[in-house]
Image (cartoon, rainbow, N blue to C red):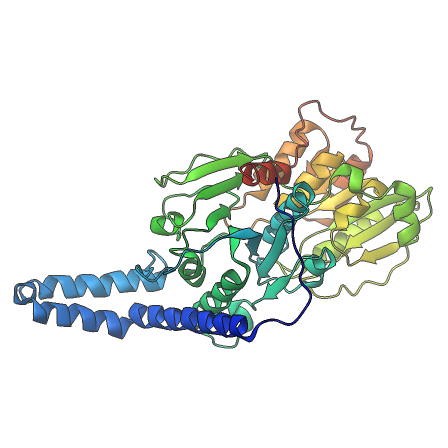
Length: 446
């Protein structure tokens, strides 16, 4: 049974304010001390003075000193992590019914969309839960519209010539303050790589359960230090249509696999008539939805122009371009071409007949759930994300095509083939939303 909240209207006692100021000053001093203890000069000094105090260690100094320098070099390269110990909370902290979510921003909205979906499901399942975002994403109005308090820290590359350790200090300082103020019971991170500043902030907080949502498993040879994984209590891997191999890095952290995470469920999408009225498209027209990424990858604007030209050869075809809120404005002024700069664009999907997509994780699974005949132009330069393998599943399942040559003739032929697809759906298409699974799993003990 949840405790009844009591609201007291009146002035706040000065002694309470003073205690809060003292606590914040104390925790800031601890963070400063932690950074001093982590500095290269301090660690070298401690190493040498320890050897001086214990003369028998002087004999080993020619071995231990180069080893210390070697370890610090690996830390700078991100191969291992150095987290100060013994600098945790000195007092018992009672966690509140609150969670802090930290989605990073990559090329697109992937990390943010997953945690935003989880946040909405958790709020639905526990309306009294306080949900707080701490993020490098610039689109702060999105969580604000849902009533989620949001703290923003610009990504390191937004700062001119800022060193990595300086930026990690910002992460440590800001995130530590957020955790101190809100005292959440849960911290959820979604990103490909754990920042050292983040690990410093969550380290030794015994009252905080730490979860890492990460698409893809941990592979040998990656830049992720194994010891950084150990700072989490739970690793959540959203599934993909591409088979995900088990991790080949050994760790003892609990692992949870969930279905693909999508932000908008089918029953939340706008109906066909509403979508076309909103965009200004005649109800009897065919509509193609085109979304080829954030607008800054591999000069995709040329691909957009080729795709639009191929689609507009059909007199009754209207094209809707999904313009990324993270990319530059598209400068396209043609008849029967409409641009939407919105989030999430999946609200519009019931109004479209066909689609042309880049093949990213989010867009693929949105099309798969809706069973919209889709031509995929997978990005071939996305590192470990094998978009080609993912998109080929649409061909096998009978609702999609894949184009790799990007030639005008090839695109025209594929769009002609796309219009001929009569897709009735597939029986084994899993439309479960992994965000539901995560919410139920994390709230199961409440």
